Image 1: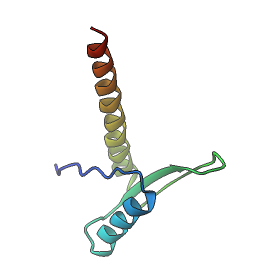
Image 2: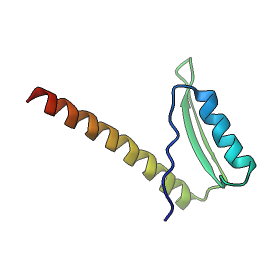
Image 3: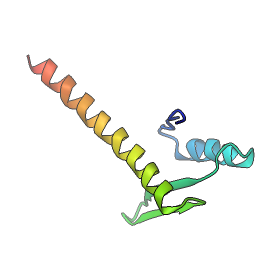
Image 4: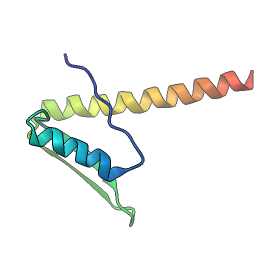
Length: 81
């Protein structure tokens, strides 16, 4: 099991360029993505990932969101005490 490297930031172009560089060097072997467009449409897709691998990637994204929600709720509850 490898490490989870988190790419976050306010600059979408920077994050995508970093991922593109990883793909160019062969470090990134597969990818899934989802994005929200300015007209509220959603763009999503994947490349070079089996259904099982896509499920693994989705699981990592879900955990990341759950951790953020738990951290936020925990901080809010502590502030209310």
